[in-house]
Length: 252
Image (tube, rainbow, N blue to C red; front, side):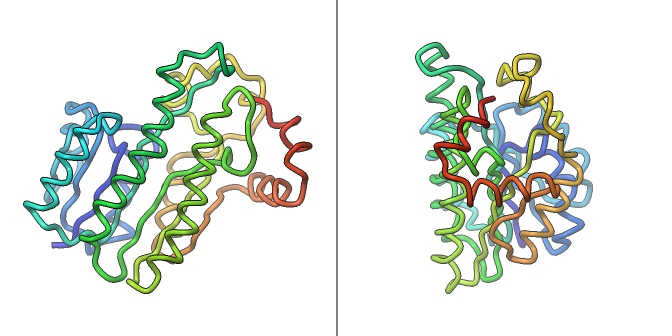
């Protein structure tokens, strides 16, 4: 049966992608849901009647999680039609002042985990498979006070473009969705809520619409999808403006 593997599935955008994936990919019968919190995954599984659900409570910052996933893939040999790399984190804080563990966690989850999961899953993907990577508008330009986060998301977007070209002969498409801020747990977990004037001024994206648009873009095989006209303009501005000038206005 055709399978979807979705990381960061327990909350926020990931949970919404799980909820809507069946509408855009009705051929998918099995869902592998990956996140740290087993109770959240089991609760989510109950909302997907008629589907084969595999809950994998894994902390993707732990290298042993890759071993567990690799073993499960080798055992079940799923036909993966959709891979969603949604697991990620972002923390507000200045270099030298922020907690070192939070800075390295962004590297481990946003870069290492996405790279590892994709590398393990691609051999099990069928032709016409889709990979959806959750990036950010932060990938368009470095953001002081969230320097590691913006750099990690620049990697995600660049990785997506390269992977899309590399996997094209296999009939696999790769899409990066680059949303603006959304009212999710991300803001509280990252110490952003109430501590960033920039976040308070930016127009927020609706996670329901972002999930729908991202899945449509993945289905269509688009490489980069940016919700909202405001952020499409920002992406263009970041392309044509010298980065040393742009970075003076992108402090979070």
